[in-house]
Image (cartoon, rainbow, N blue to C red; front, side):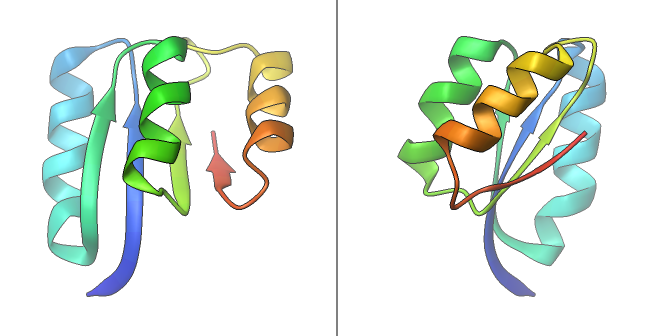
Length: 77
């Protein structure tokens, strides 16, 4: 298990839940966000070092803003 907190962001509840469930054994905590506002709230709340963001949920420009605003968090699209 890695000692990372992860946020999974996807507009599809089922896909987000399945991905979170598959990641959970490998990370300290895995949270799900279903909107850009939820991502912005979850990253600092969970102290996430990694955010996995669906490009159908956030545009490339929004992902760039997330990376800039949360420099301590790696963003994977």
